[in-house]
Image (cartoon, rainbow, N blue to C red; front, side, top):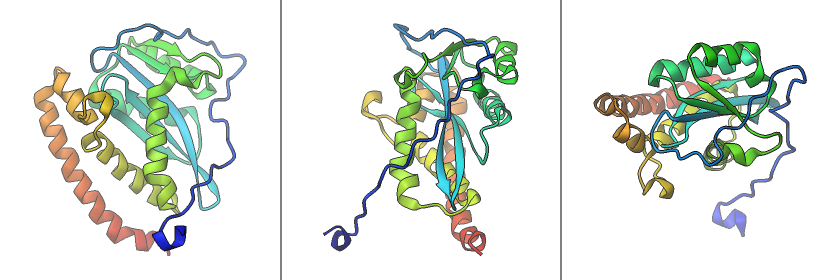
Length: 229
């Protein structure tokens, strides 16, 4: 029946822990309980997820704005080094300014000196999930679910460059076109730029994102056959 309908089953894969704590690193309290989140750049959060590409693990680092659910920055890499997490944080700050509070789990990448110093040097309050409490970072987890089940698990990327193309395309779609019932059926970009001080700049950014999305599709069609050889 599935074959006749062009359907296939998506099976869960064995879990790999991306948030292993370091016993000597300082942990920070969770600041978001009971907090009313009512504007962009009030709270950002980050997380790492992974997928299998050509028999190897590939990791996606993401940063999401809690008010708008906009993905502020991401990185597709082949290791979980703290360097990549710092790099992703810097990308988000350079593009959109800095948040008031930054939330993460207690993984060693996010409790490392380099990552903590980057936050503190920017005057950002640090919040961390309770150990084993993934619901403390629900907005980020919701994005991972969407990315995996709306894109990665149905496209079977076979190389890291191809995965990067695919994730970039999905992030552009997610931010600019994917509506959310929790956002009154608006997109993350509409909510973020519609209530952000940089609303005029936001219009140009949306136009830029759409142009990049079209260029990405063309590049994907041209270069994917080359990557597979």
